[in-house]
Length: 308
Ligand SMILES: Cc1cc2nc3c(=O)[nH]c(=O)nc-3n(C[C@H](O)[C@H](O)[C@H](O)COP(=O)(O)OP(=O)(O)OC[C@H]3O[C@@H](n4cnc5c(N)ncnc54)[C@H](O)[C@@H]3O)c2cc1C
Image (cartoon, rainbow, N blue to C red; front, side, top):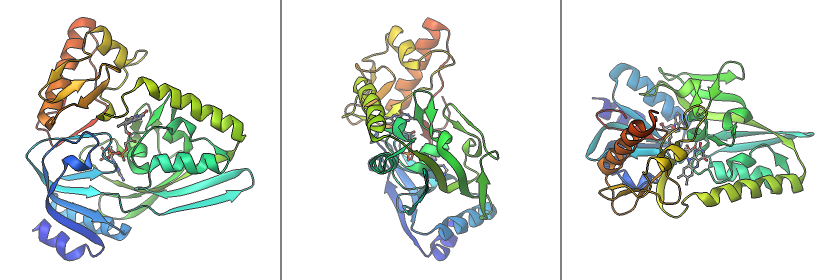
């Protein structure tokens, strides 16, 4: 019933049944989505949420797919892709600028555009792939700075399809956590956000970008990965714990722990979602046995029967 309702009511979306999900994730693994929905207009997202509030089908929101692992087999429900929602507006007012970006805008584009225009604030995000929506939902960041620091306002589609604006002070964020998007299954959708930047010295901006570019050289850039597999526990680094526990080079099927950076799980050779899940599970257990620290996944495991 919900599938027919979506097919009849989503007028500005591409709909596809049995969509292969592996090519849509940076890790390149996973099965097929029962119904893949790719809207070009926000009103279809409202409509989808309105229909879901009555019929409650499983929903997975997908940005750039750079922080997700899909399960193998058939994923029941809807995979909602944001990649065609890419509108953006740039307003300069004296030494301040505000970028209003739709969820599907690419974060690397925000970094290159703002720095080219001589505005500072986004340099820390150099090298973080994916969309603005994925970055806000997981409060992406590095070196103590995160996307939450830039936000002035976020616009969401709520559980019943209504659109709402949230000002600073109405949301909270911390390390890889954003208050409005912390529940799974998702109860709301990030439609767009306003990010604020200050005019800066081009020399200083380039210096900071160079600093972040150098940090990236300790990470595998050419292999298929979803970034850091585990979150850093308070006061420590997951990469360090995985390294001292001997996890570098471990593999399950086609999934392997990077020799360069122990917190990167790679799709080395046709890994399945199950290979990646089982490798992460082993790493978590080994670290716990050796150090007593229980690591929590940073990547979002979608469609698996159990969590990690
Ligand atoms: C090589 C590499 C390096 C990386 N380095 C970093 C790093 O330094 N720091 C860091 O934080 N991350 C890093 N990552 C991880 C990843 O790039 C970020 O988490 C990124 O912000 C995810 O964006 P995405 O669009 O790909 O989101 P996806 O992977 O598509 O989704 C991630 C989560 O966000 C949710 N989501 C996406 N859009 C919306 C929306 N509109 N509304 C509600 N929920 C939504 C999804 O449902 C999912 O739960 C790295 C990844 C790679 C591959």
